[in-house]
Length: 125
Image 1 (cartoon, rainbow, N blue to C red):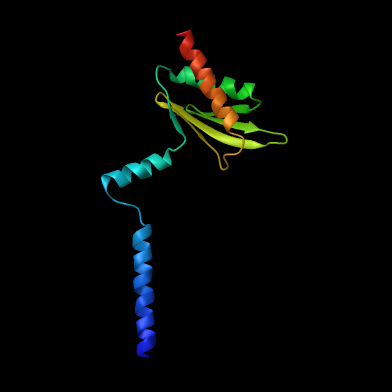
Image 2 (cartoon, rainbow, N blue to C red; image 1 turned 60 degrees about the horizontal axis):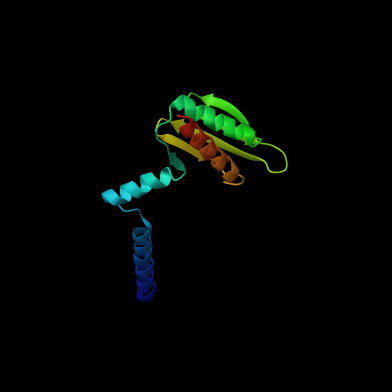
């Protein structure tokens, strides 16, 4: 019986140790890291209006063969059909944009095309 009790205590202490080691830090740096992880796909832009950003995103997607559907005033749903199907939600604001997808498959071309459109828009101004 004593042996079982020792084993039980060891298991409980091990469980608490593992939970403690895997928890997130509550320091200000930890909070920042959590926030940054949430917006890992966010691309910061400068000197572009929301209207210009919406136009660049839509134009870039269409040029790459994506079907671009306005969803909200600050969101576009991008869908690609065929052999390489993909879906993404693109949220944007005056600070930048974020391309999110359940899978990140086939998004590199779209992201590159958006960046190219924004570069071209900045050169025109």
